[in-house]
Length: 102
Picture 1 (cartoon, rainbow, N blue to C red):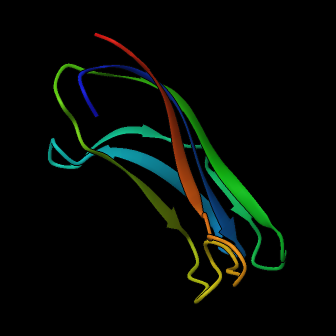
Picture 2: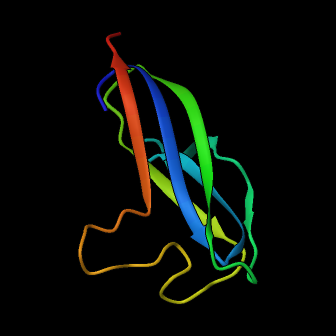
């Protein structure tokens, strides 16, 4: 991301993984944590999905690479971060940012 201010919305889903949470890290700076999303529960007995959300303003003084990380308490092979289908692109997390020049 170029230097500047970004208002961002981030989301990541979890399904039957109990507690889960996302965070945004600064890959350009030793993976420093920039912000955490909501800690949310997706009960291992519940077949629906829940979403960890984050709304945050990031200010970067130089070009920066960021990444979303998503961690869950329980591993659910194949479907823990969402069910796949064969008729569309599967999206399990996203980040949307509005950019404001420095």
